[in-house]
Image 1: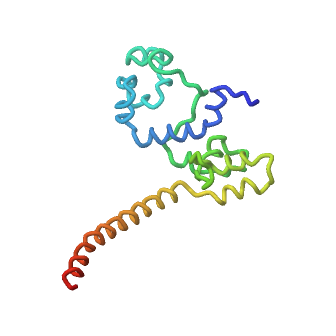
Image 2: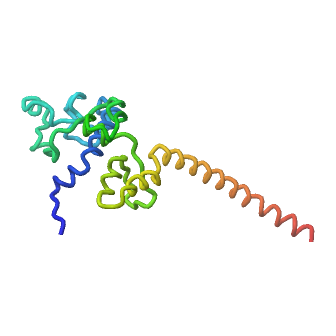
Length: 186
């Protein structure tokens, strides 16, 4: 069978973890939201709230958040985090000169038949296709839907459902009036 450690599984999702942590840093730069839900981080400054493991030992003790004691030890080797959009959306995935992080990041898509609902980069689609036909990964990428497009479709569908619910409600209000008029007419 396939034996994988927790560290192996976490490492396999490194790019997603880096991307999500970077997005958290960009969307909550002062750490207000994360401190609300992770009490161990309440005393940590904004500079380190999204990466408390980067503090010095003295700083950890001073703020009451010692990694390995008050806060879990990271399962990954040092992460490459950035709040700069260009760090996540540039580069040619086939160019060996491009860093691993940039090459494995960029546009994320969801395949319509992937029941996990997880998004993947083009490089991850191609990596998945190893051992299959050469066009398999490219075909899966072409069939997939970008995350922004899914979000846009979701908003459109919500609006259509709401409009149809309003229309149905109006028809239900109108139906008793018509029945009453028909009964009076007969």
